[in-house]
Image 1 (tube, rainbow, N blue to C red):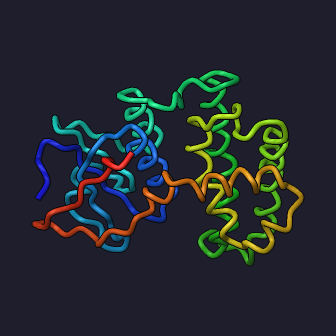
Image 2 (cartoon, helix red, strand yellow):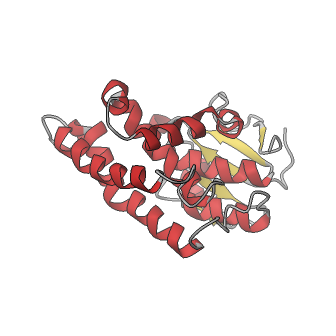
Length: 220
């Protein structure tokens, strides 16, 4: 059983929002108790902590609750930012936040309708795939001269956006990698093959009340 003094993170391995949070906690070296959630059977403790009951949710030792993925990522980086993700090679934090807002708003809307057309009473998601592709082409152009979105070092925007591009790419990998956005594909490949991403994608058994939970975040 882990210490009660550790923050508690409710997570779901494949959720891009939860990936975003875990990336921040891992790079900052912030240890936490990781409670892997089964979305079809959410634990009452998660609902009690955050009534909207969506992952990720971080519960701090003083019972403060942070239930937005970007807020968790920023909280972790403000505590410890060893790679200076908050200070990109080019542009500013506000510039990165603006690009992340594009991802979380318009692009995410298209992504959901592309990946899950039945949820929106659509015959297929092709039109929304193509709408999302227009924004991805803009990212490809940004990456034509730098390895990462805001320079040659990875930063906040890369870590916040890449999990969603991954989800888009994995919806139809053959189609995605056939597109003329070689810079974007190379950027995504760097992200996916990096040890940090591999570490945050470790599989954990679903948490159940009364059980211990693994300590996450010490490997950064």
